[in-house]
Image (cartoon, rainbow, N blue to C red):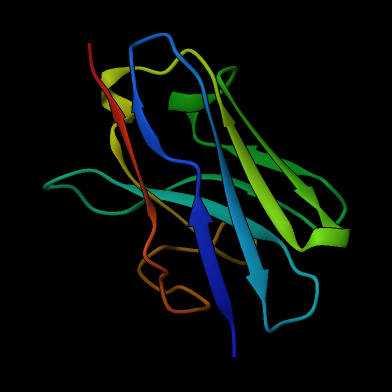
Length: 118
């Protein structure tokens, strides 16, 4: 059974940084992605990383966010720098390369709340 546990969120001022972690288990090594859902909005793909380390970012986070993975720990990270209020959302991880969030591979975990506010 696939399990995804996100952590690392919090309250940060604009311009600040956070590092999110996603501990994954229950499946073979796979591409992974980070998603976010802001209040009143649909969940969107933020970044994705392949098993070879190829990466994809949505335009709004390019140059500010970095996705990475530690295969030995089955963990995927999202380093978020220069955070903006519009980055405020619940962040989730899931399995697969650039998967449509309307059709996730696995059930969504509890996510981790990121709030960017002064």
